[in-house]
Every structure is written in structure tokens, then in C-alpha cells.
Length: 335
Image (cartoon, rainbow, N blue to C red):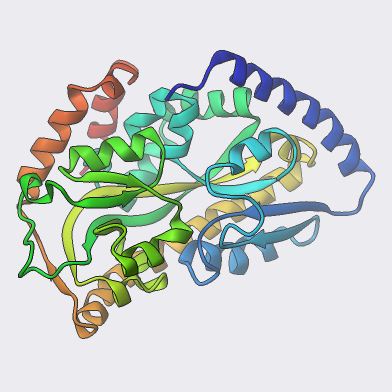
């Protein structure tokens, strides 16, 4: 939230230089190499969708080279790597974008987005145009399509017999792992917990050793990363209908022909739609699996959480950065 204008100017200038260099390079080679760096695993639905749908669809003119598990760039460094010309693609989040552009925090706020379909309507609505344009102009990053990550739930080590969570007050004193950005940390506090910043790759061990009391993620992520092996309960707060974005270097995009750009954009949407459908199906299926693993799964007083969380946001500096009328526009696109 404290990104300076100087930093933005440097990134924008770097992106401009990268555009010129990348355009010339693209003309000199048969295929454009698109390296993607992301912290999720290769079995994550986002990864599966990109490998099965996106890569093959652009294979005629581009080589898609994904790197999972944060093996190419560490979490939180991908956007600057794209801006500096060291990376072509990533799966970014509204939370990360909010570290550069405070107005993006509206899309990180608890209980703002309602479901997966609502995400698509918001992304495609003209209200998003100035948000996307600023990311392109100041970071040199083009957001191609929204990916549904899921409804984030609270996942705790301790069983219900030790702590049953029904309202935000019941999370008092709980060290809840959250990503390290200001937007994520604020959400953890708004839920009533003590947010603890930590890289995703460290979460399993931290849960296992008791360095943190819990973490928040969609149920498919709990299963995919095997957090169920080191936790005891899931509280169905559904506090954030979380989304990611397929992010591409604007320089790489501008180096393509109009036909290639159209193909790539369609491929991104195909992957996003495929991953969304699979993630929604997994959410429904995996509750039974987690119960079989011994986890207790229950719904708290969601209305109490919603009221508390929204009040926290509206009273915060985050809301001061939200463009006037956007929240009302987002709400109007809901069910």
C-alpha cells in the first residue's frame, strides 16, 4: 500500500524499454517464449487448465513454459519480473495488484464478490476498464482473464473441542497465516484473527509445527496442498470469493500479430472457463473427502462475519482508495 510514484515511474519506464526490445526479439524468432511463474502446484486446477487448454491453443506461434511451486520467481516478485522484462507470464491476484494500486483493494475486500459468475460479470464490465488500463500503463502487465480460485475458508489446527468458531470474536488470538501484503493482512484482522505473514511454500510445515494456528484457502487448495494432514477443522466462513488473473507481459502481447493476440486472448478465456468449472465441481466433491480424513466442517454465523468484516473495511483507509460509485456498481452486478 506504500508503493511510491518513483517506483511506479521506474517500472513504467522499464516496461517501455522492454516493449521495444521484446518486439525486435519476437520478429527474429519463429516462436515467442512465454515463461509463466506461479507458486501453485502442477495439480492445481489453474495449472491444469493452462497446460491443457492455453498452451496447446497457442502452440503454433508461442512456446508456453510454466514453472510451478515458486521455482522460477518467489511469490510476490512476479509482477516486477514481468515489468523488468525478466518474465512473460504469471497468475496474479487482486491482493498483489493492490500493493501497486490501492484502488484494487476493493476487489480484495471480504464479502464483496458473491460467486464465480459474479467475478466474470465484474471483470467484463466497463467499470474494470480503468483498473486494467492502469496496470498496463504503469506495470506493463496485461490481465487476460479471471480465474476462480474458490471460496476461502478458515482452516485450523485445533479441533472444535478446543475452539469452535461461530463469530469473529472466536478467532481472537488465533495466529492465522495470511499472505504478506497489506490487503491480506487487513482481511485477517477484519475476520477477528491475528494475521501472520508467510509464504505459501512454508505453510504446511508451519501448521505441522504449530508456528501458526491455521490458514485460509479454498477447500481444493487445502486438499491439493495436503493441509488436511496437519489440521483438524474447517470453518465455512466463505469470507472471500477469491480470484486470480492470467497476467501477460504487455510487451510480449504487443509483439504479436492481431491474429495471434486474438488467439491468445481466446485461449486464456478457454483456460479460465475450464479451470472455473473444475474448481466449482471440486469444491462440492471435496467436503466429503475431508470429512473422511477426520476434519470437522461446519458453518459459523456468516451474517455476523459479513457485518463485522464490511464495517471494518468501510471504516478503514482501504475504502478511501475506492473510486466513488464502484462498490455500488459491483453490487448491482450481483445476484
